[in-house]
Image (cartoon, rainbow, N blue to C red):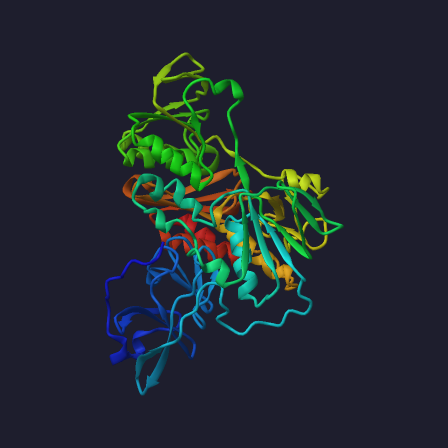
Length: 522
């Protein structure tokens, strides 16, 4: 999370800098009143904003400027240069804004403007023509919590209720398999908001309760404790559930899954006395768990059905790189294999190999949580079908996140994406559309994965491809992989090239195929 104090570099902007030092579209990093500040010029307009991303304190000066926004190189958060507002997740809070004055041929950063939190409007909002009488959000994960906050940011003052089976208030789920599980992120970093945030913004949390039926015509949601909630508009943000092993496997060691904060806590507790772990599944979640357990000094064996890790997502070159990266950190792979049985002190594979273990974690995929939507009679297609505004087949009922199958503007196909940032951005768009904004969801999918010191960024969406152009060598710390089908770029994956990842995202947004071809050419 944010909060690290940045080292001050560059000029003291309160003393002035030459105006010529800031080119049109360029950035100048400096500081003012003991804080890092970024100065940007767009035409005749001058902007000065806080230089640290409010997500994980990423260096905005190493990002890019797109229009009147600046984007963070680490996780692609986007901020308005004019207001500081976090206009695209994963950042939720705005960056600070400063006044800039031009005196002759010099620029001066003068006053810091009053700050706002993430659910407080930072600019004048358009009036809501016909606000819903009440909003219910089913789910308090990435999509649900982002939607609730956006409703307040848009000026909606009616009742907002979030219902979640999880016992914990909204938290930073990506961290559960990364720094938190590795022991390098304290638990106080995990909640997305302080405990009093939701009461202060009049956002009602109903936790530890599961929605069991949805009456879209009668506008009523029934919960598992026999109570019901009436609503005028509703967002389905029910997420996904881990794929679980068949019951006959649960005859020996307990099998851990990782989806919730409680799950991560349980793995941490089990790892404290563990010497050897078997991770079932060479997926992103499985490999991140493997890396985190290695950071705790646990010996790790990864069992996977595929011939190389992440082959279906990253292709053979990057799949081989990921394998060698983990092997260099002590992970042992057992590929083209599956678990045959789990005993009290070992996992036996389907070829008879026996791996002694005292901890087993399964990361073999997830399935969208669609039972509520199916029971309500919504149109389904391997998820909840939504239109470009994220509205389901029932008027006034929207869906976002892992459950939503939406029309992708770039491929022309309906896709369902299981990424944290996509879910947050869909939640934000759905919230605006609950209020009648009629905003098409057009964000380019993005996710990141971290393995030891290597950061992998993925923009776009390529379920299939006919060519991968690799520029650079991941073994040397950086590369770009461009995925194409019928000569059209669908996705760009980078290792150690954060700025290239941002440029690829912006090019996909613009439909700038020439720029994408140049990335592929190196």
